[in-house]
Length: 309
Image (cartoon, rainbow, N blue to C red; front, side, top):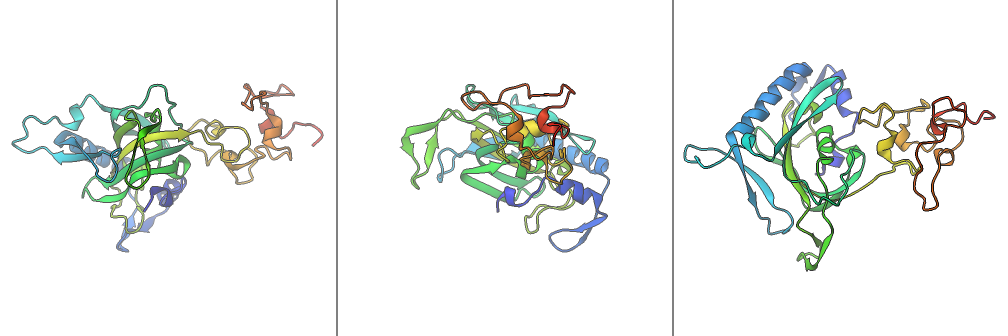
């Protein structure tokens, strides 16, 4: 099971708008107050961070993939540092539907300084495993690198990816037994602890093992990222977030129900977006965007230009 096949960006809006839903066992789940669940999830996550430590465990299937394993601190573990006290634990605020969430993440390594950070709209090459916070059961994993389009992932996952960087490249002297490559040991590595409000809320994927309103955790290793231009109109997808809310599905300038990042004619004037922007001789996008009539709206978002349409 791959997380890209489990989610759509509009899922959270849909499930919060509903009055009830079914969980894996077919039991009706009444949609709860978002703020109430947020507070409950934060207590669960912070309790976990205060009562657990982490270890790195090698994976024989892939020498690049070291699993981050969390263990509960016992009476004899006086030398173990809770994750909450780790110098590598960080947090950021993520807003969704006018609710602010604290997203904790363990950044064991940011990645190579010379490598770009992905945006929330890019494609990333990662290994990962995901588990539910309460029962610690793994619901999804890929011990070998896999490409993800971040626009098809849950909010809490793609909102943490721009805190990491990829590797400087492939180690030419190593190769895995199955023929896959080995990356230089400078890739980004860490975990993210995701409240249900920016994960699956009341409607986790069927048969996933995730309960309604349950926080989840992903261990992530980032090897590479590519800037995405989903509609190939010459504008990177992250730049098509017109309202700057880090969500792409709600930007639809011409109202044709196709978001700008997937629309090759953003203003619906019959002129392709690519023909209303400028490129240099190497094919690189030139900024700022042309505004031929000087009305403050770039040509590619202005249906009144050209005037003879």
